[in-house]
Amino acid sequence: MEFRTLRAFVEVVRQGGFARAAKTVFATQSTVSKAVRQLEAEIGFPLLDRALHPPRLTAAGEVVYARATRLLAERDDLAAELEELRGLKRGTLRLGLPPVGSGTLFAPLFALYRTRYPGVAIRLVEHGAAKLEELLLSGEIDLAASLLPAPEVFSWQEVRREPLVALLPAGHELAGRKAIGMDALRAQPFILFEEGFALNKVILESCRRHGFEPMVVAQSSQIDFITELAAAGLGIALLPRLIAEQRAHPQLRAVLLEEPGAEWNLAMIWRKGGYLSHAASAWLALLREAGAGGMVIPKST
Image (tube, rainbow, N blue to C red; front, side):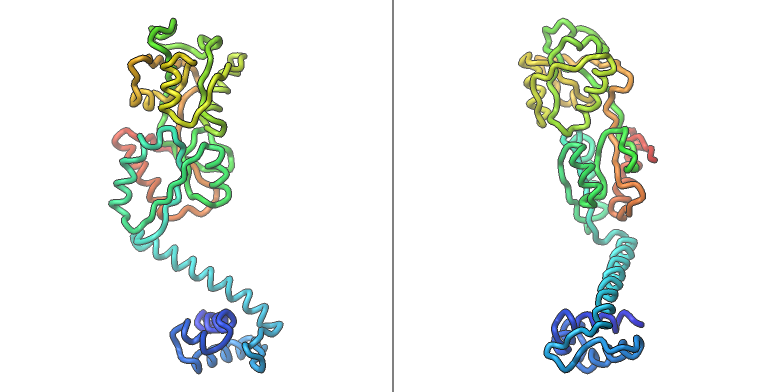
């Protein structure tokens, strides 16, 4: 049984006749007819009722058609994977990123990736960690940036580890300290990110370890807005040090949070045991390569 004869048979069914099928497979009508008869001879059953117009599938034809379409799809998938092996001349990198820190860490690497693999399309989606994990599990994206620890269903490669800093108004009683613990913030109003952001979980779990629930006065998905709210004295905000340094505000002081377990530990995650495309593997390799310059901490599990 050959793919050539399976393709001819499938196209006769799809196109509703031998003449149209011949145009689809770029062959003569007699060649297509001969291929279908060859397939019928190999199987030992008639596959088409040729007395009807268009020809109809027999019972055996329905079974063979269902199997043949799957086999041809598998062959096409195999061909696509092999094409990727030929230097990533085409393909798609489907990547999910959170709003916090992505521009700072990944924008320069996107330019380098594009230079190396110009034929690979980059498809980006931006959401909080909960939504990104959902998209990963459904197969809509190949990789996502999220905070560790990752759920057990994911494999991961660490990207960046940063301590958190508390953004305090310049005149705040704690603003002059070099570092503070979470317990010192017990009585302070908090400004958090919106629901679904992984950094919220880190902050809330740290508060609970100290036996309190923070008083949340505002939530936003925008870092700049959170910074301005903190500068206006509405409450304190906790950000990764890297991000806070890039958004220095004259009315704010960034005080290091010395708190075990309360840190921003960013990683690339993907479905454990799932197929990882060559485009996605190349992205992970680029992150590890960038680690040689100190930007990425190369570690995976």
